[in-house]
Image (tube, rainbow, N blue to C red; front, side, top):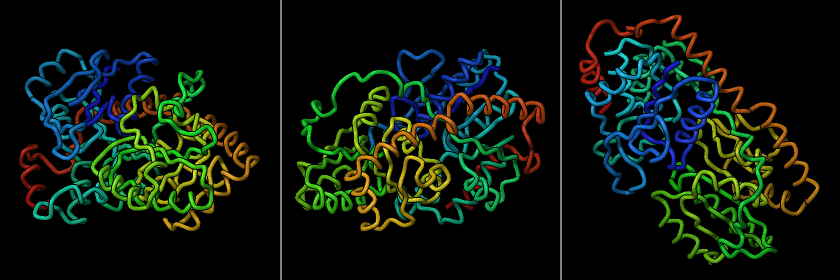
Length: 403
């Protein structure tokens, strides 16, 4: 098949959506498909990756908001003989995907990666929509597609509750397990001047409010009182960086917290495999790829069992979980793993086996290809859930309700 993936984010950016798009592209192409990515940031040397216009976010210059040029994308897409459009964001590139599907007359599948209700805080109050409006927008967008992919059953249930009528498939992003089997390239301890005697607690992800990193800082501060030879390494960047710097300075642990910033995708494996524990406290994840990546790297995980994390992790299968983001039980779990070598080794082995058996990217990519074929067979032209109004009329209607 010839597939167009349209996203507002892509590698080398570090986030779950960019990783998902990249991995599915790579594996689908290995299966004989042609996958063309359209995004505002793409690697300069990657085949079939097309950069669209975009503007930088003021607070996060590493991210761009796509300004798709409809005629340019339509002209290029027309030459690609596309069979399927797969959008990965319901905003600028998502709108473009709807228009492209309408113009070319081919199916459009959307992956609902993000719980948008948990991201309203990024809009200033005069423009911030209500939770109800965000749910209605999500329902509207999904119903404009031929099919929707939810990373977990919980997200699928939520979309059904919103009123989504389009077919919904549950398909997590898999883990590229073969990459975790290669040899190490360098020492992260030497790179960041971390003592060889220190236990490394790792976090990977956007440095943003929804990741609950300030909770992790408090938890690490308490852990450090119990085990002084510990270092927290935070891989990633984002709008909360300065607040984290202020907080660790205030707590007197600045020399024990490493803000590694953005790390190249191929190098993050070094961090997973050379750390002693992965700590994750987000309660808004749709799936939480990083916890599975940590397990695949043999790194035990302590996490809060909320939303997508509760769906992908099983207590004892490489991880210890807490039901709520409370400091004492979270720290107790971390301390237990770090002080109990046999437990840490057992969790490491079980985590690798769990991911290999249940979350292989090979399996997920084959399932996605099946979904494409099922959708193409059932809908040769885009579903008309709301009748025959034009796309721009839909935008006008939903815009009035959204704000």
